[in-house]
Length: 488
RNA sequence: GGCCCGUUCGUCUAGCGGUUUAGGACAUCGCCCUCUCAAGGCGGAGAUCACGGGUUCGAAUCCCGUACGGGCUACCA
Image (cartoon, rainbow, N blue to C red):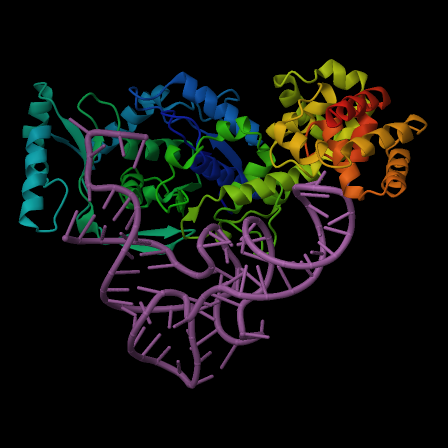
């Protein structure tokens, strides 16, 4: 029988959720969903200096925004809690006691200065040997116990089994890797103040929570053999590992603020859709079939596999994310898009939820005009502002269009023709298309004049539909006003 | 220094010994559509598969080196 899949995402709340962490979360989550397993969220807040409750809250918010739900963890609880490392001290203590009792952990009394000196000496000699020299491991059990009893400051170290042979890591992404046991040092499990180190706490939690697969960043790959040794010292089964390569900035360097936004929240604020970010991130290191680029969450959950995760690091390409975001915007239903756009319209002071409700059909009619022109939601306000407020005609458009030969003639002819016109985009189009020929001007000249008059800009959503949405009265008034501008 | 990992178009990737004149997507260029901008359609350019040796009838695919990049080597996570 196979053990049930239990995976975890264990962020450290020392900062906000960034895109790299988000991708790790997505892979864990997708893997759990695909295999009918359990996705656990654990907060690794063992660093009291840098961990904050605000960061934790922000991480939860970002995950939720992305559409990632967890089966166990903060807010939802679960049988393996608590889900904050700071609340699991008893577990670490108990595990350490077990290791003391079975001789796989021993106390070390060397001071930090002594160790630093030894490290420095080792570096100088170029012997290639690094790590702790196991001085205190040579102490007799009685001697060590007596010094601990006497209250001498000490840490607890792992007694690496010297006869172990190479530690093999069977990684789901990288394959088999062997680490020589000689390269493993007796690393610190518990600090002088009794708190566990990361490499210890994480193993205890993964063991206690019965984690079946550890899917995490490959900066942990070299720590894996150390952690395996702890699993073994405790007699626990070792989980399957899958190490994900890093996400880099456009210059091939570690992704940082220098490259623009790194936090998930920032993408929300820039008007990106969570489903687009999720899709983009999922494909940054994983592929469905090498052909498909649009992979929505449900497809991801039904098809994700560890085998198709790529080994090489990926560069974050904002251009592709933008394109993907536009693609999701275009594929969205009108009502859905309206609800996503509303916050941006509200923020710009253009419309409220009450407006949308009162003029629902009008907003639905607006959607096809803007959907294929938006790359991010935040672009909506400048695009449709002219429908809500009187536009300012900028100097460039004035010079380029309205002050050009024929503009005045065109506008008065248009105003005249439109008076008797049904106010539908089809009728408006038919009417306006007749104008150029009667006054002997190019269609483009006429239409651009009307566009600038109605929208204040040479670039706008489609003209006839825009006029329809603007309404007869406002359209005619603007054309009239522009006519005066053109002829003065 | 030591131990590990990675290297296919500018970018994300497909490829897991012959079906490959190395496929798709973004970006880019051109054409078409067209009331502007987009979107869309069609097409182009773009990768001697990091390099050098092997193994094999045959290698992007397997092995060994080299180079470059990265990680770990903390009483950080």
